[in-house]
Length: 259
Ligand code: ADP
Ligand code: MG
Image 1: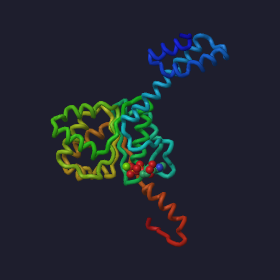
Image 2 (image 1 turned 45 degrees about the horizontal axis):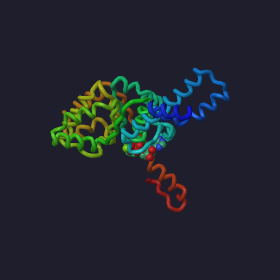
Image 3 (image 1 turned 180 degrees about the vertical axis):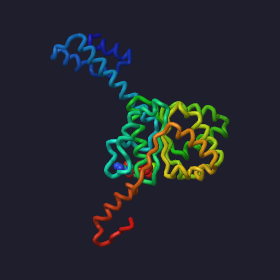
Image 4 (image 1 turned 180 degrees about the horizontal axis):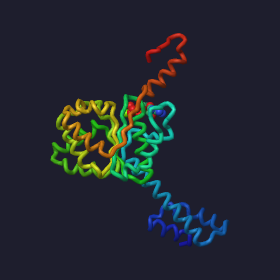
């Protein structure tokens, strides 16, 4: 076996896949640039470390189950003056996650709540944190099923593992008493232990109606808000805005000022 072949063999044995791939090129470069032993070794290991980080990040993103992938860079801050970018940027440092605190994004449909929560989730993945994204409806269905199958404890444990749990769309679908109770249990479990990022189209004052019970709603809010950043987003739907813009192009004939 030639020396290069043998090296590649060792790399594969040690699962140094990126080094195995890049070795011939890196050896050539090292010879050309007359790298020192230590500089060469550093190049090799840095490649492998970068490759593993990429893989782990991709895996975390996959495991988080985001509905789509949109970033903070893709967010048009000018279109949304009711949000202070500094507040979102602070959240993006993930200090709130390290502290087991929460974040609430409130506002009408189409103002960017899901976009921002996904973008923050992706940022958390990039920083090496485990993230789980779910809608309130899916979460409550899952918890109800677990209760029915006598596996609630197991499911609650699973939902306590991610450092950041994103719960999208509280308020679109009314939650029944059992659902509210299960939601409360989850929030209690994660309280001061794991961060929750939550979006809602309803103001917090309307959560009594959302959860069908003012007492349980205030118990949930009490825990959520103890350490929390609340962001109230105002304005028109971005989706409709885009449509309106398109409409304006044709507006000389058919104006739709109401849209
Ligand atoms: P919400 O969850 O508040 O109903 P979304 O986050 O789903 O709204 O936003 C609706 C659509 O508009 C998405 O495609 C989102 O990417 C886009 N969008 C909303 N606000 C902005 C913005 N300020 N900049 C760029 N895209 C935006
Ligand atoms: Mg949404």
